[in-house]
Image (cartoon, rainbow, N blue to C red; front, top):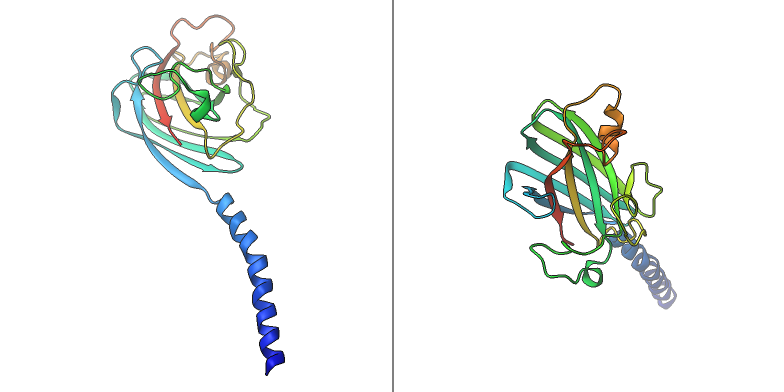
Amino acid sequence: MERQLLSVLCIALFMMCFLTPLNSRVAADRASHQTAPVNTTPDGFALGPAVPGASATLVRNRNGITVNVHTTVPDAGAYSLWWVIFNHPETECTTPSDYPCEFDLPAIVVNATGKISPGGNLDLSAWLGVGGPYSGEVVCPGILGPCSGDGLTNPQGALVLLVIRYHGPATPGIIPQQLTTYLGGPNDCAPCVDEQLVLFVP
């Protein structure tokens, strides 16, 4: 009887030692979900009124972040979606603003995806992995000025700002550039404007 009891205790201790780190890994891998409004922006920088009926969902896990945006746009044409990432907003964002990190330098600004819209509903989805490499154009650091250049390193704690940018009517010959580059073609993009913003605070 004592031998059986000792055997049961040994098995229980083994299971506790095995399952505790396993549960910790499962918790670390568990995805978190956030939903946020899609906002207009009066100047491409400040948050304006919310777009009626529009929303975005961000899914975070330790490997990266996934976003799904459902919004409406007033004009037909080419639209691009951009990630603006602050890996550690609690220490990187110090300037008072209308929303966190408004006047601070992000770690990276990189193209997420793009789509041609006839006007009206616009659905965009994208994924960003930890550490790159990044398939989309990286404009910060780059043509938009300085950034820390670390890419995404803290997917579960980063402040994520999404920018929806309009590139004018879809133009044969440069549509790929309109969907994937900030300037939207070989020359400066006169009609280009940042139209909508989405903010996800960790």
